[in-house]
Image 1: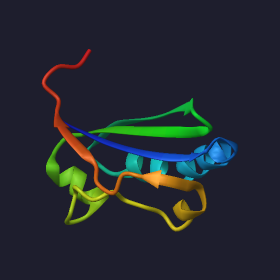
Image 2: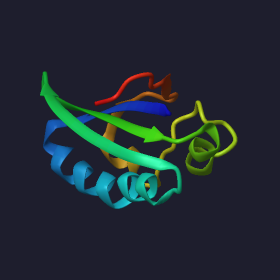
Image 3: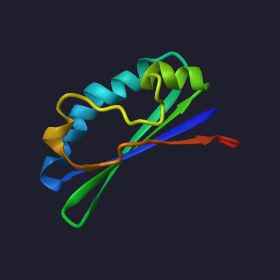
Length: 101
């Protein structure tokens, strides 16, 4: 199993709107792909900004590519991300899950 991670930051005043946007776009897309084992979208406030950490679990690299495309190390962005994000990771992390409870 593969864990995929990504982080992005908004101004604190945009956090609630971005959360709703993420649920309609990224979360919906992640969880609709066969081979997705789940997704966890989190946020925390820090120094006037809100950090969003997204993690997802995938059965295989084929499942990751079904979501992310031919370059699975690149982050997937949506049309209105520029409206909300003040900083973002352009790449994602992938980890092999060797234990899970």
